[in-house]
Image (cartoon, protein in one colour):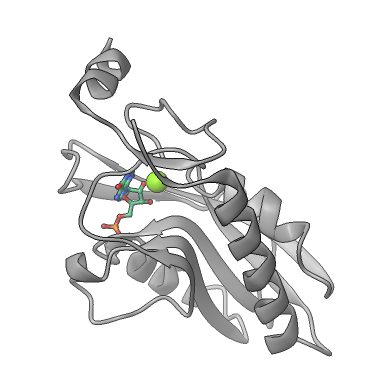
Length: 177
Ligand code: IMP
Ligand code: MG
């Protein structure tokens, strides 16, 4: 595994994002809607670094039948959502890759009639963008490489790592077992 961002680098950046978001929503409140399961680490850390009233909600989006680089059909499960009408929403995911997931979930959340919807992701692969959209907040821009850790998985493995890395063939083989 080739470490791309250490735990310390990630935590420092999350602190900066927390300050930025707290300043942007100052005098108001924000509902952070995490996209499961990738959001789990960044959600928990970002929540602890915000200094404004925050509500939380979760939605799940997963693509089945896809490969590592091209996801299949996206399935959205909103049965865990709380009432979002009139709320300022910050949609949060682990990574903004092609942007398809974020874009589809944003469209889905519009049905809830929120006051506003912004997007945030820990990582952003600008070279892969297919939507013409950009995340409003992001931790780090990365090249078009498959990464794991800090919530990001391969076959539901590696989410627990406190750092982000590029797995080698050996790591991927182990995870496939
Ligand atoms: P998008 O819809 O192409 O933006 O892809 C977003 C989803 O694909 C993320 O929520 C991740 O679950 C997954 N994904 C994209 N790139 C990576 C990666 O490098 N590692 C792990 N998961 C990824
Ligand atoms: Mg994911």
